[in-house]
Length: 79
Image (cartoon, rainbow, N blue to C red; front, side, top):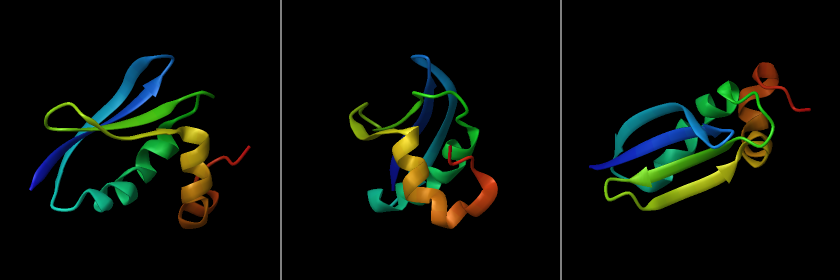
């Protein structure tokens, strides 16, 4: 199992963080949905790093919202 750190960055600061352990890094994407719901500020980003500190995913919240919109339905503001 690999350990990953999921961080929500708002205004350059870590606004929320969570560790997860997964066998496959592809399983990270479904875990990002909750961070999309928390991100209220425009320009927020989601950064995922591995146990060595290497960046695995770095995505803007606007892009992530477009990706998760069908799954989250009305739970997110699409504006």
